[in-house]
Amino acid sequence: MAEHRVLRMGDPELRTVSESVSCFDDSLACLIQDLWDTMAARGGVGIAAPQIGVPLRVVVFELVSSERYPEAPPVPRTVLINPELTFPDDEMVDAWEGCLSVPGLRGVVPRFRQIRYSGLDANGSRFEREARDFHARVVQHECDHLDGVLYPQRMRDLATLGFEEELSLSQRLGEISCQV
Ligand code: NI
Image 1 (cartoon, rainbow, N blue to C red):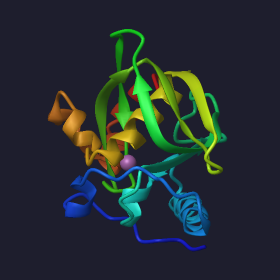
Image 2: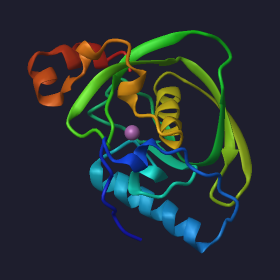
Image 3: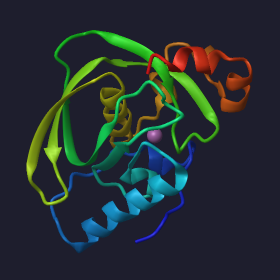
């Protein structure tokens, strides 16, 4: 049980397609705890196993409440393994995102507003949920990591990519992050 180093953009491990989990053993339980520990230490809302160098289809996420996302409703503490996403309609919404693997930067990313997701929990039990807005965004962001995709690859306009400090100084981040 430990905090791990988070791989950063440019590391080829972040670009690989991760493998499905088939064995719900102690090493999986350790991986899940390490993900929670690393996420908490970095102040993230979610993290995916490949970000700590483990190429398995495991993500965890939770938002209790956050100054960083003041308008975002809480997201339940979730372990999601071998996820499958479906999109009930085509509606997309733009909002700012950051990533523990792209430290210091934020950018505007289009995501589906509504999703359905299913997968296995830490015990291997199947569950399914509907989510929208911030919750849906977090799931789409984390699941992209399992396919080797980082949020800048989803951006339509790289002109919005910038350093957090500069964006907050220019107020742009504050104005727009309220949409999250
Ligand atoms: Ni990320």
